[in-house]
Length: 584
Image 1: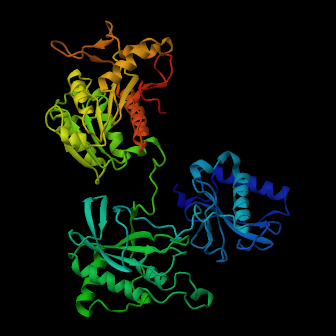
Image 2: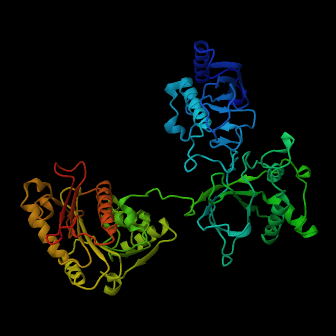
Image 3: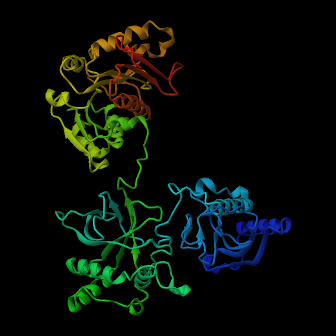
């Protein structure tokens, strides 16, 4: 039987209703069920609840509550969705955490905040906390959920995500272009240098507390009366906006091909201030074609009465990936990897460590990454290196460059031919990472270290026996020691320290069985280690190197030793500062 045809409550709904009835019997003065549950067409149980709120303290600027407040409670059939609370008035309009002027958003993240085991007692406690904070004016404007668009959007299947990275809109009514990157992604740009779908970006005069509707006619009505003032017998707070919007929409539609949908973007003022909230929608191709015919016949400066527009014409709302710097905070904010942001990085050796290092550094925000490794990818490497079946036969540098470029549009990736890049280019980089484990490369780096350089040099490696240890020798600009001298100094200190026995293997010759021969015949011995091991070692070393890049004034030279939790016993991290460098 479909949910729509159910005649009785689900077991979960009955459980919650019984809990609520029990609470109402125990505290009749505070909780009262004033309308018994009924099932709606979606199978949700709807009931009306009255709470005694006269004793909730009120402070100036807080929400005005009556002695009793009634709420429409909706209980879903499944325990995975929490109950919700709505009101049937507009007195809460404009307060944070209120959708459509009537639905209270009491769970910011239901997956963490909704506990089915707490049942209706937990739900009522959450609702009571919301009312207490609202009455006290305790919502923090910087973090509270002030909804610029208060309605729950009806996202249409098949609509693309619109990616926005450019600031704007620079004008109240602006023509942008949507660039199709894939069937599921369009990028918005204000640059006239790009071809693409002409898209009006329209700045509306106020927030839309009741949402933007799911039909074209109702949307135009809300543009002219966003707070539904007419329903309360008041004049709308804003001047009519639908004529200007339609003019902009028609002008764009005329410039787009027949048979195509018409997209638009709304820039909605945010109740908490700051940059506009962006909302993207589109009209079906049949509607867009009708608008084109209308514009060709009557021009674009026409007025359409929303009341005469077919009420069934839908607006297909799109997902928005609003990545403007002024409205987003990086998810890796205030972490060691922030040292890579905007940096120019060289990665020599794109194998077990280098291929993972490169990806983590690309995601951390480096501006330019130069990769260097002439080796060819074979199938056996896929066990632990950051490549795929499609990469087999390519050089590691070429394949890795393609992968890195796919991670970020704004990242510049350069492939250096040969064993190392041009020395002048290397010296001007912010960071050189040597992941080759090559004596020849170390000798070459010793010569670079003595030059006038901007680059911080980091040599990284793992152990042959397990691939669970990591080392990063950090040679700062102006350091008196070369990379090989730094490594020799660290090796002597470690081998003389019994407490660091775990790391002795990094300077000792590999014992029999420590290395493996991956294929029969003339196969170069290599170290043990999985993708999980090497990615974890690389990630840890990236964090260590990032900390040095954050030392703007005087980066410290020295050696980091790290081990993974499943490595043999020993210190998980140890730093040996360079002998002549006692800073840090």
